Image 1 (cartoon, rainbow, N blue to C red):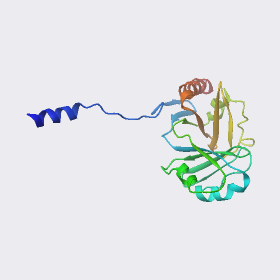
Image 2 (cartoon, rainbow, N blue to C red):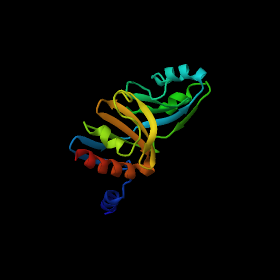
Image 3 (tube, rainbow, N blue to C red):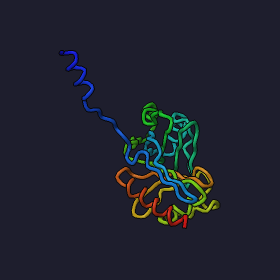
Image 4 (cartoon, rainbow, N blue to C red):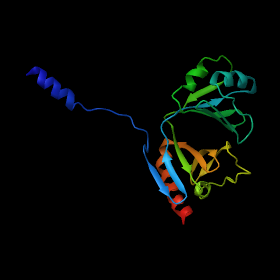
Length: 193
């Protein structure tokens, strides 16, 4: 009897599962598709010029030094977001914060994996969808594949990365992710019209 009660209790025990904000949200409209991307490891990295080379070596991706640029290698992307600041995103499960801890050069690395949510915006109407609330010139001449920028979408700050001719990654704070997804959803409908 005790075994049966223990088995029943174990089966009824509540489980806790951590799910990312907006997990699984998707939308498809004529010419554009939106999807909340799977969780990724992220750091906000600050470093002086003298530390860039050793950090690049440790991270396995060259930290870009020019405005509006990014670099990617083996599932890890580094986006230039300021003169001495990068957003580093790892989509294959490695921890860039742990990698930076191995370097003794001057730098500041802060884990922001749980702060951010990423949304992909793809399709021929992707740029028009984003431009409905973002002043960034998204023409291919001004914002080519690999371009990255800290900018705004509607009322919130985002980091925008062009991943292909008709594909973008929108990074935003988790607390604004519902707003950003809804904004983009409504803009996608307008862009499709």
